[in-house]
Length: 524
Image 1 (cartoon, rainbow, N blue to C red):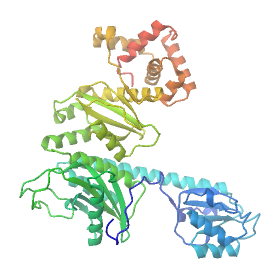
Image 2: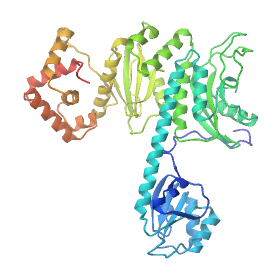
Image 3: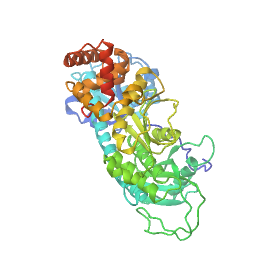
Image 4: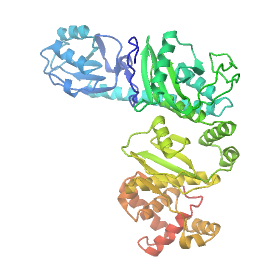
């Protein structure tokens, strides 16, 4: 930053996958018998590590509760100094059989360097402590996931309100217990919610907003900073504001008067930023903010009018489970639609910002991040947009589909993605029915399929369909279904038994493949 009084902001990175465990929570487990005898009382534990090396520094990542019996402890001061330099969170020292008590020099070194020191009684194995920490971490993760889920539902509901932008900001400020602002590149506040920040904090947020909205190569999409103990964040939005006429009114969020007038017209296409000021920063806050970024980008899209607002609300309602018949009047007659399912090729989970970037690359703002098990993304494309391979992603796409058939298309896109992953291709698109299959009336074909496949349960039918689509490959079918290859063999054997047929017969396979392509209601 240009201002020397403000630390240089850093581009945000994902938080730890699990919230840290407070040291006090571990000490509260009376069955462990742990006792803090030196160092500060507050520390956050990210994991547990056991080492009897004289200098474990090269093998520490930071945030560890290091457990040791002091087998090679010769220089306590240097030992503790190296632990602090490596970022260790605390030291647990086990008494007996090596030491009858915690060495006094070690206690003094931990007090001097500010490292919490725990005395581990002889009857408490190190593995018991590790198990307790993992259990506390699992509990903390479940609590954080529930909090993020509640926030996601609240934000999605707010986006469907008549005044979606201030409603989303209000929910975001409430769930993060802070201040949420929609700012222009020049720092002008369009909507705000939550407690008022200090003038210094407001100025710092304005500078962060300018940083992420700069129209130049290499500008970060998000940035963080701190000011006076307050955590600050700014995220660039994909949307832009319209040019209002003098005297237009816009709804205001909490902390501003309703119906405040716009005093001057703004430039067409001015970029926007979401800015946040919070007292603390929890691991799930980045995810919650990412969800808000996607919604606000959608809600502030260019050329946004009443029809666009209705379309955005329709999307949210569709994602919340409304039927296509309810959404169709709002989405309008345009179509057909292509459904794309995507997953990162490196196996990492896609957050809301990454998913939004994928949608932008495909030419759509209709993006659902964290679909399925949480690591997949689905995108709705409207003609003339057609999906193309994307670096770092594996895609599965449908053929163009009318709106009432979107739920079925959603299933077909998931199958296409599974096929792409099993065959290691960047993009797999379903093949429409052609040739002889297209000559049979759909209702008669579906009736035949229901009769032929009636003995199969939905999981068995889906396994058979996937296995046939991959030319009977056990390994590729196992990859596509995320099960063991032996499970595939057992299911296919069960299918042959229930159908009373020979699945090695090409005629049998052809007829079954035709039936499975009809997707009867009993098939998932």
